[in-house]
Amino acid sequence: MVRTTHRYFKFDWITIILFLILVGFGWLNILSASHTGETLDYLDFTEPYGKQLMFILLTFGLIVIILSIDSKFYERFSSIIYIISMLSLVGLFLFGKNVNGATSWYAIGGMTFQPSEFAKAATALAVAKYLSDMNTDINKFKNQIQIFIIIALPAILVLLQNDAGSTIVYAAFFFVLYREGLPKLYLILGIGLVILGLLSLKFGTLITSITAAVLIFANHFITKKKPPLLQPILVLLVSIVLSSGIKFFYQHVLQPHQQDRISLWLRLEKDPVKLDKMQKTFAYNLNESEKAISSGGFSGKGFLEGTRTTGKFVPEQHTDYIFSTVGEEWGFVGSAFVVILFALLLIRILHLAELQKTQFSRVYGYSVAAIIFMHFMINIGMVMGLIPTIGIPLPLFSYGGSGLWGFTVLLFIFIKLDSNRINEW
Picture 1 (cartoon, helix red, strand yellow):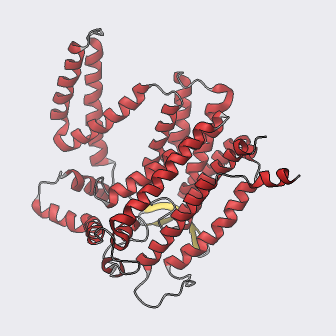
Picture 2 (tube, one colour; picture 1 turned 90 degrees about the horizontal axis):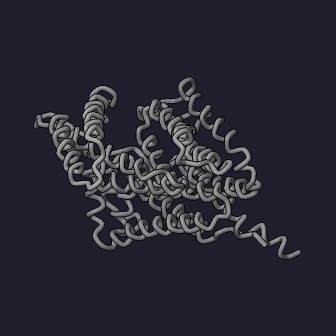
Picture 3 (cartoon, one colour; picture 1 turned 90 degrees about the vertical axis):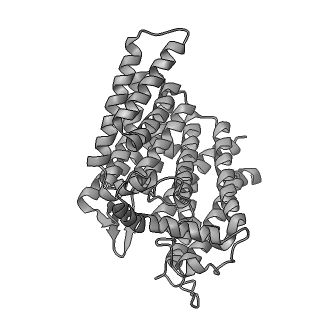
C-alpha cells in the first residue's frame, strides 16, 4: 500500500529542480533590472519583480493541476486543445489588445493574457498526436502536407498579429519531424533557403543567381551519377524565383522597423545619414546590452550593483534583454551558469524523450526541447548581436506571466507523460 501511495509522487526531479533554479535565478535578475536603487519592497505588486513573484506563486498551483490530471487526457484531448488554442488566436483579431505594435493580447481586467504562449504547447500536442496515430508514415507526401498545416496554422495566425518573433519559433518543429524520419531533403532545403535569403538581401538577385548557377552546375558535373540536365536547370529557376520573392517579401511585406533591423544587421543601408539614424534608433538597445554584459567582466559587479542595470540604460531589460543583467551583475561566471543550466535542461529532456515507451510522449518531449532551444538560441543571439533584434523572451527567465505559464504548461505536461514510465511496475 505504501508503494501505491508513493508512486503518484514519482516524477523526474532533476528536470523539476532545473526548472526551479532557472525560475528563481530569473526572478533575481528581474528584481535587479526593475528596481530603482531605492529600498526594496518585495511584495510591491506594482513593480515588475512583485508581479513576477505573484506569477511564480500562481505557477505552483498550475503545476499541481497539470500533474494531477491523468496523462491519457493530454493525448486523448490533444486535438480539442489544439482547436481551442487556434480559436483563441483567431479571437485576437476581434478582441485583441495592441501592445508594442502586436495585437497578441487579451485584456482581462487589469491584466493581459497572451494566447500565443500556450499555442506552442497545443501545437506540440497536436503534432505528437498526429504522428502517433496509427504510426503515421511521415515519408508519405500527403502526411507531410497535413503535418505542415498543423504547424503552419498557428505560425500564420501569430504572424498576422505582427509577432514575427513568436512565428519563427515554429520552425523548431522541423527538428522534431527530422527525428521522426522526415527526409533529409527538407533540412537541406531549409538551410539552403536561409542561405539564399541572406545572399539575396546582401548582394541582390543577380549576384545570388550567378552564384547559385555556378554551384548547381558544378555539383551536377562533379557528381558521378549525373541526373538529367533538366534537373539542375529547374533548381536554378526555382532559386531565381525564390530570390526575387525574398526581396519582394522584404521590401513590401515586412514592416519598416523589421526591415531596418535586418538592414542594420546585414549592413544593407548605404546612406550614412539614414544609417546613423537607424543605429541610434534600433542599435541603441543592442549597444547598451553589449556594454552591460562586457562591463561585468569575469565575476560581475554583484547582485543589485550593476550601474548600467540600475541606471536603466537598457530598455526593456527585465523582458527580452534580461540576459544583459546576468552579464553585468554576475559576469562571465553567471552567464556561463545560465547557459549550462539551459544546456542541462535540454539534454535531460532529450534523454527522457528517448526513454519514452510511446511515440506520442517521445514526439512531445522532442517538441518541448526544440521550442525551448529555439527561444534560448534566438534570445541569447539577439542580446549578443549575433542575430537581428527579435522580440522573444528567454524561457522561464524573462518577465511575463503568460510566458512563464506557457513554458510551465509545455514542460510539466511532458513531466506528467514521463511519470508513466517512472511509475511502471
